[in-house]
Length: 160
Image (cartoon, rainbow, N blue to C red; front, top):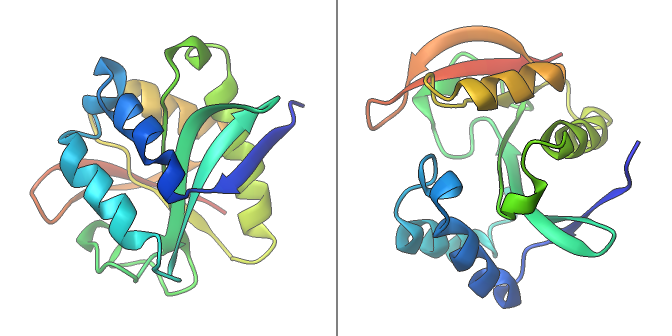
């Protein structure tokens, strides 16, 4: 088991986030870097969302955030009760793709979350077969297909 560390996202991390959001493999699923950065900056003071920079041996390589399922009124999670935690993430450093790191750090974060919360949910885009596969490997099960507020179809998955 690798020793992934999670530290709070800070203002000082925003240039790194901008670089990562500009990479082709990230912007496919996290489009419009300016909007994403503005949301990150806005949510830094929001006690309802936890935003993390994921590192391995002091090398930052991924971003992850989690929040209560009802915090943002996302329709794809409307059937899940308060207390379920929603997780979303991306690997920013291309050198960390395809080596099992995504599964590893997701499993680590889910382990921490499950100590406090009854369930963790994710909602990768229904066409993101790689992301869905990674979440399955990390122990998530398909729950249902659902539409987001902007009409995208996502695969809602839960880790019980």
